[in-house]
Amino acid sequence: MPKRILVVDDEPDMVTFLTTLLEDNGYATLTAADGEEALQMCKSEKPDLVSLDLLMPNKTGIKMYRELRKDDEIKDIPVIMVTGFGKDDVPSMDFKEWIQKRAIKPPEAYIEKPVDKDVLLSAIKKALG
Image (cartoon, rainbow, N blue to C red; front, top):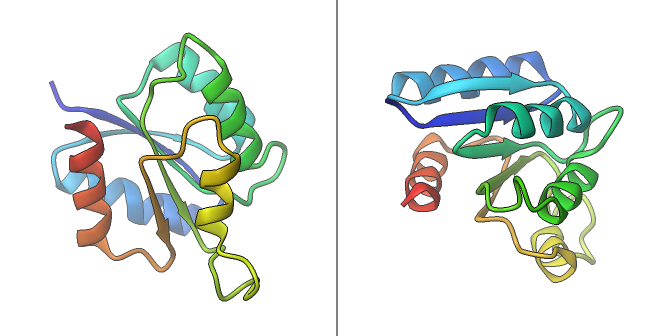
């Protein structure tokens, strides 16, 4: 049975890109358009990994990530943050470092958009063991 990856992103083009890439590489995919929907899916579907955008409506990826890590039922699901928010957006701050210092448990990987497919697939393989 293929590993299931929950793709969380509010940009339809990014969801299509990620789900196609993952499915072409043997993964099953689930999708959510915001953090609220993603948390519900994590609880009901128990994906093997979450690909998480940070800036979304309703509940941001940051809030969703913090809630996921505090919930004993789902806190161990590996998370790869895939976001367009990088060092160039706020030059005085390394956003990856900021997340890692404030997170209960740092994400398994942090990948900036545009996504390098080989980097993403390698991070997923490493996170899934």
